[in-house]
Length: 289
Image 1: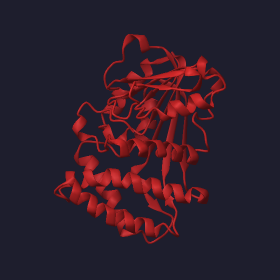
Image 2 (image 1 turned 135 degrees about the horizontal axis):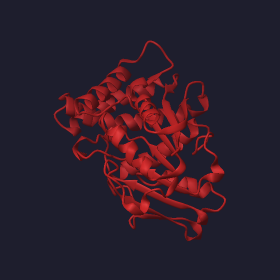
Image 3 (image 1 turned 60 degrees about the vertical axis):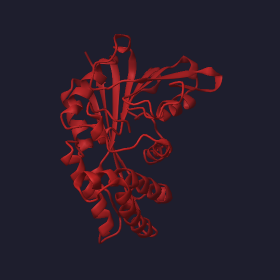
Image 4 (image 1 turned 90 degrees about the vertical axis):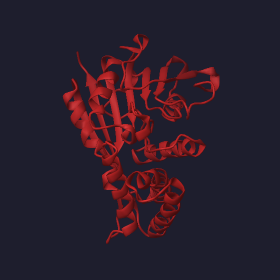
Protein backbone atom coordinates (compact mmCIF):
# COMPACT_ATOMS: atom_id res chain seq x y z
CA UNK A 1 0.00 0.00 0.00
CA UNK A 2 1.75 3.12 -1.19
CA UNK A 3 0.76 6.69 -0.52
CA UNK A 4 -0.63 8.58 -3.48
CA UNK A 5 -1.71 11.82 -1.93
CA UNK A 6 -0.14 15.14 -2.75
CA UNK A 7 -0.19 15.82 1.00
CA UNK A 8 2.10 13.10 2.29
CA UNK A 9 1.40 14.04 5.90
CA UNK A 10 -1.98 12.34 5.82
CA UNK A 11 -0.58 8.91 4.90
CA UNK A 12 -1.48 6.55 7.76
CA UNK A 13 1.15 3.84 7.27
CA UNK A 14 4.87 3.78 7.93
CA UNK A 15 7.76 3.32 5.51
CA UNK A 16 10.31 1.49 7.64
CA UNK A 17 11.69 -2.05 7.50
CA UNK A 18 8.81 -3.39 9.57
CA UNK A 19 6.34 -1.97 7.03
CA UNK A 20 8.33 -3.52 4.18
CA UNK A 21 8.04 -6.93 5.85
CA UNK A 22 4.33 -6.39 6.49
CA UNK A 23 3.71 -5.45 2.86
CA UNK A 24 5.35 -8.62 1.58
CA UNK A 25 3.39 -10.81 3.99
CA UNK A 26 0.22 -8.91 3.07
CA UNK A 27 0.74 -9.76 -0.59
CA UNK A 28 0.87 -13.47 0.15
CA UNK A 29 -2.28 -13.24 2.27
CA UNK A 30 -4.29 -11.34 -0.34
CA UNK A 31 -3.26 -13.76 -3.07
CA UNK A 32 -4.32 -16.65 -0.84
CA UNK A 33 -7.85 -15.34 -0.25
CA UNK A 34 -8.32 -14.51 -3.93
CA UNK A 35 -7.78 -18.10 -5.01
CA UNK A 36 -4.04 -17.79 -5.70
CA UNK A 37 -4.70 -15.53 -8.68
CA UNK A 38 -2.75 -12.37 -9.49
CA UNK A 39 -4.82 -11.41 -12.53
CA UNK A 40 -8.60 -11.63 -12.48
CA UNK A 41 -10.03 -14.47 -14.65
CA UNK A 42 -11.93 -11.95 -16.81
CA UNK A 43 -8.61 -10.70 -18.22
CA UNK A 44 -7.15 -12.87 -21.02
CA UNK A 45 -3.67 -13.54 -19.66
CA UNK A 46 -2.15 -14.37 -23.04
CA UNK A 47 -2.61 -10.71 -24.04
CA UNK A 48 -0.67 -9.37 -21.04
CA UNK A 49 3.04 -8.73 -21.50
CA UNK A 50 3.43 -5.08 -20.43
CA UNK A 51 2.26 -4.25 -16.89
CA UNK A 52 2.40 -1.14 -14.72
CA UNK A 53 1.89 -1.49 -10.97
CA UNK A 54 0.69 1.67 -9.19
CA UNK A 55 1.45 1.97 -5.49
CA UNK A 56 3.94 -0.83 -5.96
CA UNK A 57 5.51 -0.57 -2.48
CA UNK A 58 8.20 -3.26 -2.44
CA UNK A 59 7.36 -4.39 -5.98
CA UNK A 60 6.31 -7.79 -4.63
CA UNK A 61 3.24 -8.10 -6.89
CA UNK A 62 5.33 -7.51 -10.02
CA UNK A 63 8.03 -9.88 -8.81
CA UNK A 64 5.44 -12.60 -8.17
CA UNK A 65 3.85 -12.02 -11.59
CA UNK A 66 7.21 -12.27 -13.36
CA UNK A 67 8.31 -15.33 -11.40
CA UNK A 68 5.14 -17.21 -12.34
CA UNK A 69 5.32 -16.20 -16.03
CA UNK A 70 6.70 -18.83 -18.43
CA UNK A 71 9.00 -16.29 -20.08
CA UNK A 72 9.87 -13.40 -17.72
CA UNK A 73 12.41 -11.99 -20.18
CA UNK A 74 9.57 -11.19 -22.62
CA UNK A 75 7.80 -8.92 -20.13
CA UNK A 76 7.81 -5.12 -19.87
CA UNK A 77 7.12 -4.44 -16.19
CA UNK A 78 7.30 -1.18 -14.24
CA UNK A 79 6.37 -0.21 -10.69
CA UNK A 80 5.41 3.27 -9.51
CA UNK A 81 5.16 4.66 -5.98
CA UNK A 82 5.27 8.14 -4.47
CA UNK A 83 7.99 6.99 -2.06
CA UNK A 84 11.09 4.85 -2.73
CA UNK A 85 11.34 3.83 0.92
CA UNK A 86 10.28 0.22 0.24
CA UNK A 87 12.22 -0.11 -3.04
CA UNK A 88 15.34 -2.27 -3.31
CA UNK A 89 18.51 -0.18 -3.10
CA UNK A 90 18.99 0.15 -6.86
CA UNK A 91 15.29 0.92 -7.50
CA UNK A 92 14.89 -2.29 -9.46
CA UNK A 93 14.14 -5.95 -8.89
CA UNK A 94 16.57 -8.38 -10.51
CA UNK A 95 15.23 -11.88 -11.08
CA UNK A 96 17.01 -15.08 -11.98
CA UNK A 97 18.18 -14.80 -15.57
CA UNK A 98 18.85 -11.10 -14.93
CA UNK A 99 15.31 -9.99 -15.82
CA UNK A 100 14.99 -6.48 -14.42
CA UNK A 101 11.88 -4.75 -13.08
CA UNK A 102 12.45 -0.99 -12.72
CA UNK A 103 10.68 0.93 -9.95
CA UNK A 104 10.09 4.67 -10.27
CA UNK A 105 9.07 7.43 -7.90
CA UNK A 106 5.88 9.06 -9.16
CA UNK A 107 2.82 10.68 -7.64
CA UNK A 108 -0.05 9.09 -9.52
CA UNK A 109 -2.15 12.21 -9.02
CA UNK A 110 0.17 13.85 -11.55
CA UNK A 111 0.48 12.99 -15.28
CA UNK A 112 2.94 10.24 -16.17
CA UNK A 113 6.04 10.85 -18.30
CA UNK A 114 5.39 10.57 -22.06
CA UNK A 115 7.42 7.36 -22.45
CA UNK A 116 4.86 5.50 -20.34
CA UNK A 117 1.70 6.70 -22.03
CA UNK A 118 -0.20 4.08 -24.00
CA UNK A 119 2.46 1.49 -23.18
CA UNK A 120 0.81 -1.13 -20.97
CA UNK A 121 -1.63 -4.01 -21.46
CA UNK A 122 -2.53 -3.97 -17.76
CA UNK A 123 -2.41 -1.39 -15.00
CA UNK A 124 -2.60 -2.98 -11.56
CA UNK A 125 -3.56 -0.95 -8.48
CA UNK A 126 -3.88 -2.29 -4.95
CA UNK A 127 -4.57 -0.87 -1.50
CA UNK A 128 -4.19 2.88 -1.84
CA UNK A 129 -6.94 3.80 0.66
CA UNK A 130 -4.51 5.02 3.32
CA UNK A 131 -3.35 7.87 1.08
CA UNK A 132 -6.36 8.90 -1.03
CA UNK A 133 -8.94 11.61 -0.48
CA UNK A 134 -12.39 11.09 -1.94
CA UNK A 135 -11.74 13.34 -4.94
CA UNK A 136 -8.38 11.72 -5.68
CA UNK A 137 -9.93 8.54 -7.11
CA UNK A 138 -11.10 10.27 -10.29
CA UNK A 139 -7.70 11.89 -10.92
CA UNK A 140 -5.78 8.70 -10.18
CA UNK A 141 -7.96 6.66 -12.54
CA UNK A 142 -7.63 9.20 -15.34
CA UNK A 143 -3.84 9.11 -15.08
CA UNK A 144 -3.81 5.31 -14.81
CA UNK A 145 -5.98 5.04 -17.92
CA UNK A 146 -3.46 7.10 -19.88
CA UNK A 147 -0.88 4.33 -19.34
CA UNK A 148 -3.00 1.75 -21.14
CA UNK A 149 -2.82 0.65 -24.73
CA UNK A 150 -6.16 0.59 -26.55
CA UNK A 151 -8.05 -2.50 -25.26
CA UNK A 152 -5.80 -2.63 -22.20
CA UNK A 153 -7.14 -3.50 -18.76
CA UNK A 154 -7.19 -1.95 -15.33
CA UNK A 155 -7.41 -4.07 -12.18
CA UNK A 156 -7.94 -2.19 -8.91
CA UNK A 157 -8.13 -3.99 -5.55
CA UNK A 158 -9.13 -2.49 -2.20
CA UNK A 159 -9.94 -3.97 1.20
CA UNK A 160 -13.16 -2.80 2.81
CA UNK A 161 -11.86 -1.30 6.07
CA UNK A 162 -15.42 -0.63 7.24
CA UNK A 163 -16.32 -4.34 7.39
CA UNK A 164 -13.57 -5.57 9.74
CA UNK A 165 -15.17 -8.08 12.11
CA UNK A 166 -15.15 -11.82 12.91
CA UNK A 167 -17.68 -14.63 12.49
CA UNK A 168 -18.35 -14.66 16.23
CA UNK A 169 -21.05 -12.68 18.00
CA UNK A 170 -21.45 -10.55 20.00
CA UNK A 171 -18.68 -8.43 18.56
CA UNK A 172 -15.59 -7.99 20.70
CA UNK A 173 -15.44 -4.35 21.92
CA UNK A 174 -11.73 -4.17 20.98
CA UNK A 175 -12.66 -4.86 17.35
CA UNK A 176 -15.32 -2.14 17.36
CA UNK A 177 -12.86 0.32 18.87
CA UNK A 178 -10.10 -0.36 16.36
CA UNK A 179 -12.39 -0.32 13.32
CA UNK A 180 -14.15 2.89 14.30
CA UNK A 181 -10.89 4.59 15.26
CA UNK A 182 -9.45 4.01 11.78
CA UNK A 183 -12.65 5.07 10.01
CA UNK A 184 -13.05 8.22 12.11
CA UNK A 185 -9.40 9.21 11.66
CA UNK A 186 -9.53 8.71 7.89
CA UNK A 187 -12.62 10.88 7.61
CA UNK A 188 -11.10 13.56 9.85
CA UNK A 189 -7.94 13.61 7.71
CA UNK A 190 -9.92 13.84 4.49
CA UNK A 191 -9.25 10.24 3.47
CA UNK A 192 -11.96 7.94 2.20
CA UNK A 193 -12.47 4.51 3.86
CA UNK A 194 -15.23 3.32 1.50
CA UNK A 195 -12.82 2.32 -1.23
CA UNK A 196 -14.25 -0.79 -2.96
CA UNK A 197 -17.56 0.85 -3.87
CA UNK A 198 -15.83 4.07 -4.91
CA UNK A 199 -13.41 2.19 -7.16
CA UNK A 200 -16.27 0.40 -8.88
CA UNK A 201 -18.22 3.64 -9.34
CA UNK A 202 -15.20 5.47 -10.75
CA UNK A 203 -14.31 2.70 -13.21
CA UNK A 204 -17.92 2.61 -14.40
CA UNK A 205 -17.80 6.37 -14.98
CA UNK A 206 -14.23 6.48 -16.28
CA UNK A 207 -14.61 5.37 -19.86
CA UNK A 208 -14.08 1.64 -19.30
CA UNK A 209 -16.14 -1.22 -20.66
CA UNK A 210 -16.49 -4.97 -19.97
CA UNK A 211 -16.43 -4.18 -16.25
CA UNK A 212 -16.21 -7.04 -13.78
CA UNK A 213 -16.57 -6.75 -10.04
CA UNK A 214 -15.74 -9.46 -7.53
CA UNK A 215 -15.41 -9.64 -3.77
CA UNK A 216 -13.09 -12.15 -2.14
CA UNK A 217 -13.55 -12.85 1.56
CA UNK A 218 -12.12 -15.06 4.26
CA UNK A 219 -15.61 -16.21 5.20
CA UNK A 220 -15.79 -20.01 5.23
CA UNK A 221 -12.04 -20.32 4.54
CA UNK A 222 -10.80 -21.89 7.75
CA UNK A 223 -7.49 -22.76 6.07
CA UNK A 224 -6.51 -19.05 6.27
CA UNK A 225 -7.39 -18.81 9.98
CA UNK A 226 -3.84 -18.34 11.19
CA UNK A 227 -2.66 -16.03 8.44
CA UNK A 228 -5.71 -13.75 8.54
CA UNK A 229 -5.38 -13.28 12.30
CA UNK A 230 -1.74 -12.27 11.88
CA UNK A 231 -2.54 -10.02 8.91
CA UNK A 232 -5.34 -8.13 10.65
CA UNK A 233 -3.21 -7.77 13.78
CA UNK A 234 -0.41 -6.29 11.66
CA UNK A 235 -2.76 -3.89 9.90
CA UNK A 236 -4.24 -2.73 13.19
CA UNK A 237 -0.81 -2.22 14.72
CA UNK A 238 0.09 -0.11 11.68
CA UNK A 239 -3.12 1.89 11.27
CA UNK A 240 -4.63 2.37 14.72
CA UNK A 241 -1.76 4.18 16.55
CA UNK A 242 -1.54 7.11 14.08
CA UNK A 243 -5.34 7.15 13.97
CA UNK A 244 -5.49 7.51 17.75
CA UNK A 245 -3.02 10.38 17.64
CA UNK A 246 -4.98 12.09 14.86
CA UNK A 247 -8.18 11.85 16.92
CA UNK A 248 -6.54 13.00 20.15
CA UNK A 249 -7.07 9.60 21.80
CA UNK A 250 -3.34 9.39 22.54
CA UNK A 251 -0.76 12.11 23.02
CA UNK A 252 1.89 10.41 20.91
CA UNK A 253 2.65 7.25 18.94
CA UNK A 254 4.33 5.52 21.87
CA UNK A 255 1.24 5.89 24.07
CA UNK A 256 -0.98 4.85 21.17
CA UNK A 257 1.08 1.71 20.49
CA UNK A 258 0.74 0.66 24.14
CA UNK A 259 -3.04 1.00 23.92
CA UNK A 260 -3.18 -0.83 20.62
CA UNK A 261 -1.04 -3.69 21.91
CA UNK A 262 -3.76 -4.33 24.50
CA UNK A 263 -6.55 -4.17 21.91
CA UNK A 264 -4.71 -6.41 19.46
CA UNK A 265 -3.95 -8.89 22.25
CA UNK A 266 -7.68 -9.12 22.99
CA UNK A 267 -8.37 -9.59 19.28
CA UNK A 268 -5.81 -12.39 18.96
CA UNK A 269 -7.23 -14.17 22.00
CA UNK A 270 -10.74 -13.80 20.55
CA UNK A 271 -9.56 -15.33 17.26
CA UNK A 272 -8.46 -18.58 18.87
CA UNK A 273 -12.01 -19.74 18.16
CA UNK A 274 -13.18 -17.06 15.69
CA UNK A 275 -12.34 -16.32 12.07
CA UNK A 276 -11.47 -12.73 11.17
CA UNK A 277 -13.54 -11.64 8.19
CA UNK A 278 -11.73 -9.63 5.54
CA UNK A 279 -13.30 -8.42 2.30
CA UNK A 280 -11.17 -7.64 -0.80
CA UNK A 281 -13.02 -5.90 -3.61
CA UNK A 282 -11.61 -6.26 -7.14
CA UNK A 283 -12.85 -4.24 -10.10
CA UNK A 284 -11.66 -4.83 -13.68
CA UNK A 285 -12.33 -2.67 -16.70
CA UNK A 286 -11.13 -2.53 -20.30
CA UNK A 287 -10.11 0.63 -22.13
CA UNK A 288 -12.10 0.75 -25.38
CA UNK A 289 -11.42 3.84 -27.49
